[in-house]
Length: 247
Image 1 (cartoon, rainbow, N blue to C red):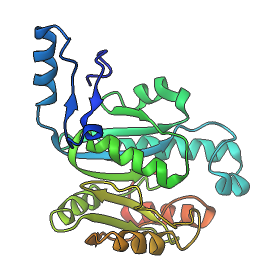
Image 2: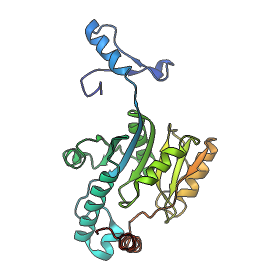
Image 3: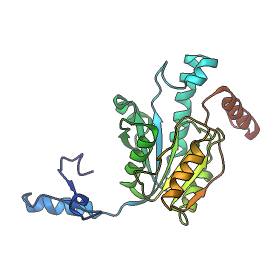
Image 4: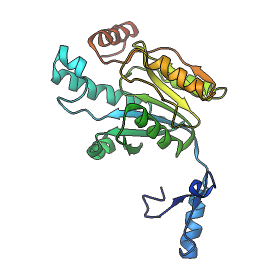
């Protein structure tokens, strides 16, 4: 918040003072007091991060597009994102939209006007997840991250993840394809996804092994489907029909 207002801050961990900032003593006293007052404000207790790709026709959802066509895949991706943002919008937490591509800021502001919007950095999926979690941790002390490929995830699953964080260092939601669709943390670590080979059926197990190597206590919530191919799309349609929800 200070950075967007034009303040220059130095993370004091560089000086051995973790959790603090160094503010220039040459700043006018009134501005210095205002900066210190803003820094001292308590963070929210919870934040929910949506790791999202703003849909572009012909980009993303390649496995779905191969069977249902790029136009329908684009329409589904747009609907999935809208539903995911709606599910994760709540007065009980801060909503963070970690988005890509970087030029989609105006679309994100329209889709999630009350969310804290942050662009995803370059890097592999692990680096982008860590950056998104860190963005959430700047807002709150507990963070749960989900993607936009689980449009029918119940609110109860997010509540379950926050409840599990009371007794665990990290919470994972295993996806039925071997990955994970949710992760909740109190803090991040640069090595939390070490040796994870992304886009494989071993992602969940490799992530667990990496987190266990850090000595973290791991909790889990119920498995859910990432909707990224025709089979998982049909499973979503079946759940909608079974639950009596509108498609």
